[in-house]
Image: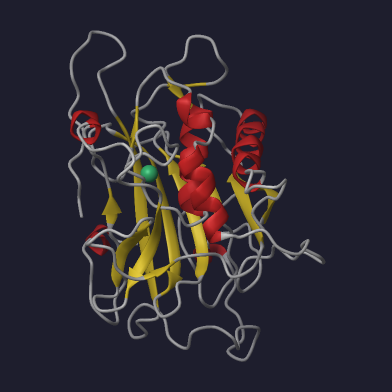
Length: 318
Ligand SMILES: [Zn+2]
């Protein structure tokens, strides 16, 4: 995906919007109970990313996004990071996903959603392939952060979805291990990977940023904090609205759309024209307009960990 895809685009192109940061000082000035969780949505009029919140805001627009099946999978890029091993990453994300799928929806019920880890894979590109296999990847960016945020963005989740009905087709997560010193555990916390992971999983599942400052889905992370590890009531209300409790999930098939592949598209063999993709949208990037991608970032409310120099937050981008 090219950088130019960042700008919302019209029919026939991929639209991408960045949900970004607010300053805590501004958010604290808001009445605490005035705003709550928001769901990432597609706005039909503009075919761009928007949000629908509870209660509704004046600017809310669109059809909220959700995975169409209660069986979803993810894969970890096998190289993990120089800062974190694959085994450590596996444990972190298992916990992060479980935090959401085990959320208390009341009366002992939980969201009707199962998330399965499919193991490590080689592909490190965030992409959705309409004619080849896919994986919902989680990858670290050790060698450079391609989004030019100057270190204030900790991670980015890109969700690809159907523009007409909001069905999520693919979600990929990138963690900024180039600029950011990650930590694990409760001692000597810098940028807590479990906090970052838990927030990004919220995006993966269809939630947008909340204005509730105590929520995991609040847009800013305060360095040295582990607060985002645990869901707030606002987060629980959000995930339970996206995937309401229901019948137990049976015969769960978490295979990504168009089949699973641990290879990026460029390394996958071409498929026969007639093979396998009858249910796919009939056109790809250049012509279809059926798909869009939304990217949401978690930012550091940063002061530098050492030296005390203030880092700028990112301004709200939409
Ligand atoms: Zn975020």
